[in-house]
Length: 328
Image 1 (cartoon, rainbow, N blue to C red):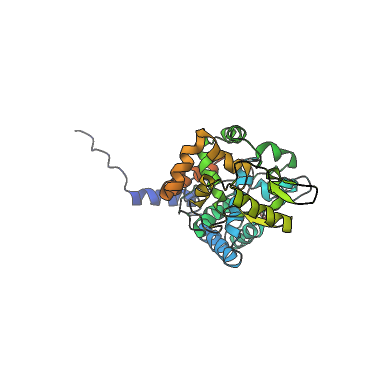
Image 2: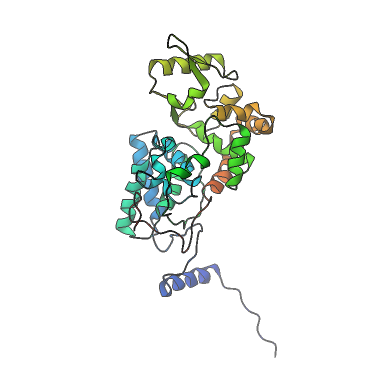
């Protein structure tokens, strides 16, 4: 007599099996996946989103700060929240990181999570989720990202400079760094679109200006639109410690205006302008400038790759109790 054919389990039965496994073997690992906290801390993503929304309602610069914070974290030691650690020799001590912001939002979310799910949700995941949600609040796309990152225990100031983009970089220098992180030239163009929100201190564009003997500032970057250059020069001459918007048109809206600015020769940084000046990336800049939906679609793909750079899972790292210090 032939054996009866095996009936594949239904999705409900698979879900029940997962629940049973988690209850019987609480240490079982479904490492780094979408919905990682579904059973261990079901409200994790909602709590992070609520804290980001609350902070942004009081300070509209928060979304850009959180997005920049993730960039600076993932490019040094991977996406492991090492940039959040405090100390004289940590990543935060590097001059390039002293202007970072949004730390209080991460600590606020982590504090709530520790009340409801102590020792479960990593600071690295809080930061990745917060940056994701920040883009949504600024008008960007909703995307699903995997969670299950663990927090790093190493944060060295000496690791910062070799691993972050300087605003004076050439396209080749930026591409080499992106390649070392597993990111492509297209990812570079897409992720540079983060400059559609946020601002920069005048000190960050000193490679684009010079001061004459009378103390007057003039822009020396030949590719810059003259009118835009003079506006920036006047702004920085009047207040050298002032900030200027990355995107002077829609500085709080996550859209494709950044690429339109590049085509109009209004890239704030040298690292922005080269994306349009160089033939290797000009076509993609042109596409995004003329098709905002193409940028939004590609943003989701490239952001996902960024948030996956160098993640620590399973036995690596730890789950910090406080994001500013290791558990040691």
